[in-house]
Image (cartoon, rainbow, N blue to C red; front, side):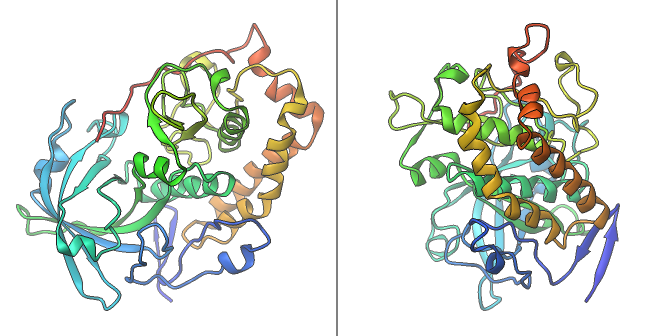
Length: 372
C-alpha cells in the first residue's frame, strides 16, 4: 500500500475515511474502511467513495476572478463512470464566498458550479444537482478534509444538514501545458435541495435565535460548541441557513455551514472574533441564548451521548488523518463530553450567555454570501 506524507497530512491511497450516517447500532458496518474507487453511485451523495473529477478550461481566468461580482466561466467537468469511462459534462463556475475568495487569504477560492442540461447529465450522478458548491484548499488540503468531516459529524445529529462528497480534483488549464498536482476538495449539496429533502423551503428574513424551533437550535448551538466554532449568528444569517414550511411560515430549522474557522479544523488563518475576547479558536464558547433551566438541554445532551461512539469513530477510523491530529482531536472531544456530562461544568459553560459581564451576547455580523 502506497503512503505519502505532505505537511503532516497522511495520504493512504486505497483507503477511505468514512463518517457513519447512522446510529452506533449500525456503525460497525458503516465505518469499515473501503477501497477508494473511481466508480460513482446512482446519486452523488449516496456514495462514500472519493470521486475523481477534472475541471478543464480557462481556469486561470476563473480562479483569478476574485471581484465582488464574479461572473460564470465555461468549463468541462469530467468524471469516471462505473466502467471507468471518462464522461465530460458542460458546466459553468464562478468564485464565491468572502474570506476564502480573497487572494491574500487563499490560493484556491471556493467555487459555485452550475451544470448545463444535457443527455449526459441525465444519466450521471449529478442528474439531481443543478447547482453545487465546491470547497477548495485554502491553506492545505488536510484542512479541507478536516472541514468535510465536520459536515459528516452534523449528518449524525440532524437530517437537516448539508450532504457532502469528498473529491480528488485535477485542474487542466487550457492556457497552461503544465498540470497542477491533484488535490482533495469536497462538494456541498445545494441549499434548495437540502430544504426540499426535508419538506421545507429556504427563507431569508430577520430572526432572533429565540424564534427558531428550540430543539433544532439547541442541537445546532451545542454542536458549534463541540467543534469550537464561534463564527456564526442567526440574526445576520452568518454561516446559517433558515428553513420553514413555506415562504411566509415560521422558521422551524437553522442549518449551519462553513466550518473552516472551527477549533476542530484548526486552520492556520482562523482567528476568533476580537469582540469575543477569546485566546484562540480552540477555546470553546457557547453562543446560544440565555437558558437558566438546564433541563431544557436534556434531550440535546442525550442526542450527543447517543452518537458519541460514531463521532469518535469518524476520526479514529479515518485513514486520511495523521495519528497526531487524531490523538489531539479525541482529547478535544473528551473535553466536550466531560462538560456535558457533569452538571456543574455544563451549567458554567452554557450559562455564559446569561452573564451580563461576558461576551455571550455578541452577534457576529460577518458578510452574507451571494446567491449562486
